[in-house]
Length: 409
Ligand SMILES: [Zn+2]
Ligand SMILES: [Zn+2]
Image 1: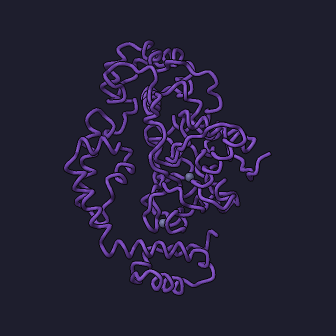
Image 2: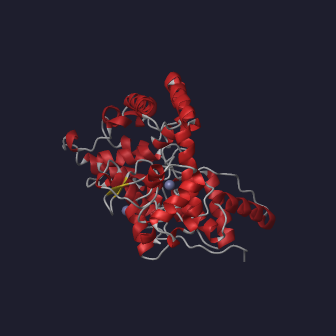
Image 3: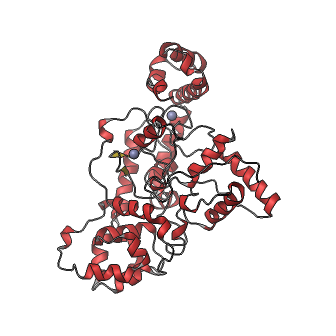
């Protein structure tokens, strides 16, 4: 027995499986604390009761396959008497590269349609494991692009300071599923989407993965290295086949050759045999990765993003925020583009210090504070309360508030 409330993982071994960071947030909400506070308490408890050490792991990396994730799952097993392995990518820990690059996305993202389904069906809103995987950009159930910023205040949702349910913004506490626009509708599947979904559905069935799936797979395919360098770009560094590939590499190879990713992981020889039977298929029919991922093109692609961010503000994002939004390493950006990143950081700081931005931040904070009494007020009363408290002008506050807030509560 532990002193913690129990939270059960939702929909494990299905496309809608919950991820571990979502479980931790729901546990935090159940205990009336932030996720940071909950994890601190869990660490102390595990140390005292079991003599085990849980490292600090405050990034959104709880959902991957690193040794720290394995420890977190063990600690939760002791605390909750439940197995949360299926809420992570731990099944891939013997398969994919030890540095975990290319597995879990840097930024939290969500499908507004899924959150609306959660709330209307009366279950807690939760983050899906599939949303956490790098390269997954669209919900195939609702045919909507995933969001990564609040539709009201624009904030990214990476903070651990929130005590709120997962469909509410960390900053303004309004509904992250509101204001679905036509522009978010996305009817066509994206590169790798089907394979990522198949992986999440079958995560529980990867009991005995092959130790060198990519090498084994390409050994069964003639001229594979030349072909792959041309069509799949920088996924195979130095043109040598990695023993432990990045997850994005597995997804790209499976998608390009049209093989099932679970088969590629567990029986690569068999997967290669099936592709070899299919050699006469013209390469055109094979899916090509989006051009931003091809060798050298990614650097140029990110440079454009940087230049655009500098030209099109305000608001100017910080270099870190821009990198996170584009799944680009911050240190790589600083090393490759010292002049541009410095220029952007300078603009960001100037903008942050400016009056408009200060007022906007105060307005967002006031909206969050008054969210508790929101349901008792008319829109007009709410707006004027926020204006008075923050000093922000009416037109600014009106742009920040969710007019349909009460519909989902
Ligand atoms: Zn959805
Ligand atoms: Zn917000």
